[in-house]
Image (cartoon, rainbow, N blue to C red; front, side, top):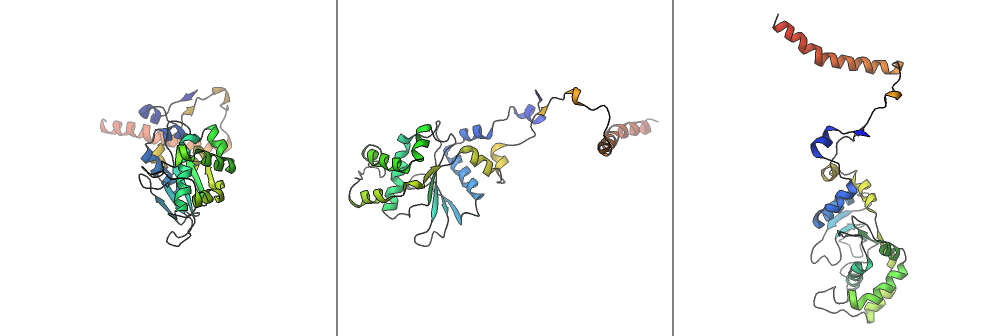
Length: 247
């Protein structure tokens, strides 16, 4: 049992950060991920958020080298804010976009491609990401039904010729995911962390009187004396003032 703090009385029960993340809007989620990547400035030269229509499969981009130089290196952070863990059927198109737009030289193949979602990945998605050859097989098998007609609206992109060669030679080990709890822990270093999740003191545990020592220890006497002085200054001084006023 705990004693509730004044913060809890005023604001209600604290919402755990991992739960609060789940009620962000999709736009807030992308902003939050961009902020989180600011804590990794030693790894990246620049962070850029694309998001929205026309991002060509890139939500938040972390440049490892100068993006103005051909063949630059970068990592892709794909933000997905759904009301359920990620599943393969919804993510095949994301594999397809990064494959297709790297094939058309819109950008180089990223060094790493991370799925970031507040509810993480479901079991089937996690299992898929653990096996690059399974991702490759799934992309080829699902190209017609889940990918080819969805990369560019109104256009059917066939997996043939040099595009098929690109898929065959593609490094599918770049795809991975990052756990929500890891993101929260690392974002705690950002100055905006309390803006997102709030703060306040935790509830105080109810005191067990049986654990109170019978006497004050020598190393506690200074603290206890100062505490008594503080009480005297706030309680006795106003009383003395009243005595003077009404004498």
